[in-house]
Amino acid sequence: MSRYISALSQAARRINNGDLYTEVSVPPHASQEIISLAENMDEMRESFLDCLSKEKERSRSNQELITVMSHDIRTPLTTLIGYAEIMDKSPDLPEEERQQYSSIIYQRALRLKELTDEMFYYFLVYGSSDIQVDLAYYNAQVLIPQLINDRLSAFQDLDVEFQIQVIEYPFTVHTDISLLNRVFENIFSNIRKYGDLTYPISIRAERKEYDFIHVYIRNRIRNDSHDVESTQIGTKTCSKLMALLDGSFIVRADAEYYTAEVLIPMSH
Image (tube, rainbow, N blue to C red; front, top):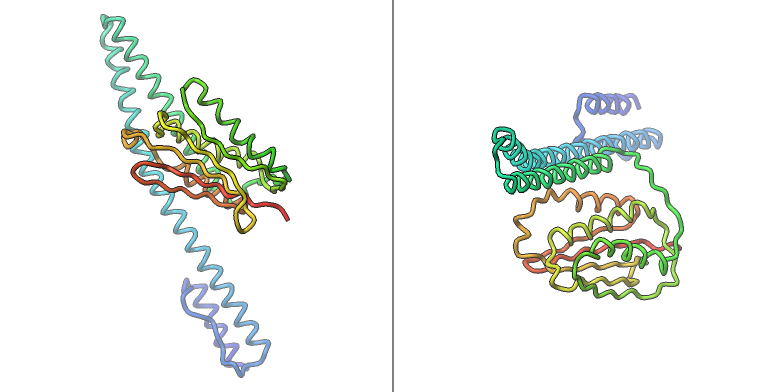
């Protein structure tokens, strides 16, 4: 037995020194106590390895975010500073041009606020391992139309056609309505920014397999949408939020259409 204990001691030293890739094992004819100890140590090794892998992925994602955000923040900030400098150094600037520059500065300032808000919420979601999820039971027949209709008010100033098909559901969902609202807010915000609103926006909700309610939202993509600044933070955040709710968030896009699919789990 002493040689098995010595082998486990060596394995413990390897793990302590950072070797998480060597399996901890003992011969099958060892005592059950030694085998159980080896299995527990190997589970611990795999747990450490998994945590390390997740931390590396989180670090990589955060580095990508910082790179993207630094570019996206610098662009409107440079424009804002440039026009502000023109106005500051040109006291005789015609009033029409001054108003034009003021409008540009204001719009760029709003864009900076939007970017910093997105970044704050991203780190709030991805930087915390203990996000508060306030689950409650909701009647899907009431909740789904509410989630959709609450967003439509943002399009009242536009001539937009919505094609909505919401089947009546005598079902109950177990979810966090505040997190779900955040997901739908992001979807419709993207539609307003990137969508070709001269085409109808299709919204469909139905019960599908695996006891999920599927909400599909599809819109045509505007031709110049590639010129609109995007960090993709919202999509990543929505995916994380729906994972916390035991659902999922799926995005599909081609040259013409953007489709967001929200899967909300039903209660049993």
